[in-house]
Length: 164
Ligand code: AMP
Image (cartoon, rainbow, N blue to C red; front, side):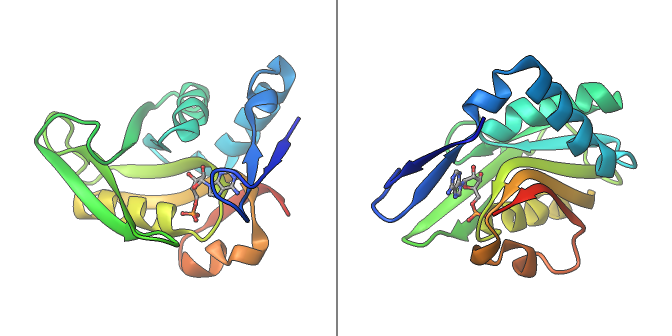
């Protein structure tokens, strides 16, 4: 239920596509329950653009919390909070609304599909902390162990359901 696509989106990258897993009723339920386990103490779930939206919303419903979509740069109307981070080539940005949702003192748990170098989750942690939230941890379906994401997130409890 996990499709590996060579040389996508760039030569040398093996893209892990979770679409078949998410489209399977039993698979989605099992993954949602497992991701929700370490998130119990949170009062808000943050799902990272874009597959993290699906999983984050499913986990939030399980926990009885709301979900915050952490968007790629340029998708949200102003005012926004922005965190810029490095990719292998160039930079990227993640954003959340700076208005309309008060994160001060909230306990937020981060959900995404894949942990690679950890830069995306690290930027999300900074974004949420700068907004006044406490990040209680992060969970992903798949961890690409060789890329060192867990080490890059030292101090943050990280759960992965599967490591390759
Ligand atoms: P990173 O910031 O390097 O940990 O990258 C994690 C983010 O990029 C996640 O939002 C993933 O969806 C995506 N990503 C990175 N590498 C892959 C991969 N090999 N297959 C699928 N998604 C990936």
